[in-house]
Every structure is written in C-alpha cells, then in structure tokens.
Image (cartoon, rainbow, N blue to C red):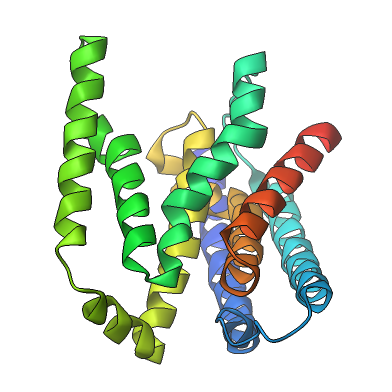
Length: 241
C-alpha cells in the first residue's frame, strides 16, 4: 500500500513539473494580458479574451486533475461538505467581495486601495493568528491590528507605490503572487493533512485559472468587473456541482 502511494506521489510530482512547464509557456502570452495596457480596448473584447483564456486554462486544469485521479487519488481528499444557507451566501456573494478586496483591489497600487486591502488582510488573516476565546475582545483585537497595519501603509508615500508599478518585472511579480496566493488559499477547502500537499496543489488548479481571469478583468475593467465575474463564476459552479 505504501509503495503504491509513493509511486502515485512520484508520478504526481512529475505531472506537476510538466504542468508548470505548460503554465510557464502560457505565461509568456498571458503576461501581455495581465497588465493595464489593454484598457483602450472595448469592454466586450476584454470580456471575450478573458473567457477564452479562462476556458483554455480550465481545460488544461481538468485534464491534469483527471490524470491525477487516474494514477491514484487519495480517498481522504474530498472537499468539505457543510453547506448551509449562510455558507452558500458567503460562497456566492460575500466571499467574492472579500477575496477580491484582499487579493486584487491593491493591484492598482493606489494608496487608498492598498490601505483598504491591507486592512482587510489584517482583519481576516493576521487577526486569526491570535486565538482569543472572548468574541468581543477577539473582534476588537482584529480591528486594532487591521487599523494599525492600514496606518503603516498610509504613511508610505504614493511615489513609492508608483515606483513599484513602473518597474515592469517587479509589478508583474506582485500580480503573479496575488494569483498564486488566491489559488493556494483554497487549500483550506479540504480538511486533510499537509501530507497530501501535491494533490492539494493539483486540486487548486481551477482556482489558479479563475485567478488569472479575475486579475485580467481587475486590471482592464476595474474591481467591480472582477467582483461580478467572481460572483457569477461561483454561482454557476455551485449550480452545476
């Protein structure tokens, strides 16, 4: 049994490497779209381009996941199934708004939008690092951390943010970081040990594809377009699955 698992993991690691090569080749073309240089195009053109890019990446992701299932997919690796009316509302509406604020609002590198993103990141993520039993003290602590972090980024002059955005390679690194961060955050959808990390990375490939789509819309159509696309995609996915 152990040798079978090891064999499956070795094949899966090879699959990840091959997929990364495919993604790197795609990135050479996608990098052109993951910028704000397409804003002059008509919105309908941007929407069509985004849909085509997403469908291509989604098909690649599905093929990779299907092959991973073929060579051996752990039975323990299943999404959490605790859907209630509240979690459905969070998944389809509230979640996308929070996630777009955290992962993509700041990509404009405008100080105001960076402060909003940093405040949300600090409240929803950094605040969770401190476990406090009392509900109200926990919320106040998270708010304090959020506002302090927001203030620290407020003190940074806009010229510093502009210099980062004007550096093509540095700015592009931040864009890809936001996409990878967004996709890997969905590992939390699975209640399994990190022993299955290679499988978890494969399972998050559809979110990686969606992250590229949302980022493309964010940079070229604005934050409201990426939020709407996120809500729409989550809603369609929930209905179909």
